[in-house]
Image (tube, rainbow, N blue to C red; front, side):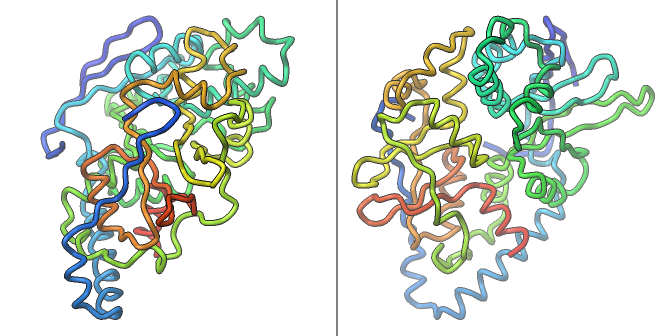
Length: 361
């Protein structure tokens, strides 16, 4: 592991010998539907009891797989992790995230030589809310450091505080998944310790997406997870927060804060899904310290979205976890919106929902 310090942040190169691994902007999002697989023919020859039995067998096999692997096993052959010192200015951290096309970074306290939490898009949303509630403090925003995020959290009374959960890279992958679910975190830093100096070492950050992709690539039992979603009691099907293209961005940000969610689906007047506004989209609006774009509507804000946005992923209640797993294996999916045959929004299925179902159902 090599690390270089550069104006308050590290860029670390990692080496990993074990792993075999490895959009669109605009107001009208590209909708990517789950593709049917040849298992539909197989399903017609299986009884409901057989399908349910295979589902149980598949889930147990995946749990054993997660127990048998470490978090380190999931990391790609080579990787880079950017680590911010807590004395870094928030606006500088934001620009580095955007320049490197990442949405989170571990924090490092150089005084204690210890991991200090994980910076995510939620922290920037808290900053936006704080200054919208305290406009007289806006003149000081350019001097806000990552150290000050704790005070911002307290001031806005947020339930999404700075993520501090972590795990040793050689602990079972199953344990990392449990920690993430228990702490409602979508990613978990892997923290080691130098045997001689006892200084902590930030090895990497593991995401739910990376874990589920690893499972889909390496655990053949995903092929027998053929029960349809409507039988699984999985995902959120009631009280779905949605917005329209004309909804002000600040209203969507308030929704994210109130509901502790990372995205809001965008629907038309017939409740048909047309796009999604994500927490990471907020970062693009405030880059360079410009907060005036927060007065835009969602539709106007989506026009500023990066061209590498991969689109909105959808599924139906008749889709299986195998079909969804295949999509995760092939594409960078963070959530799926559940729609009916006409494209009307019914619910949302997050990667946390899938992971929780695999671990505890």
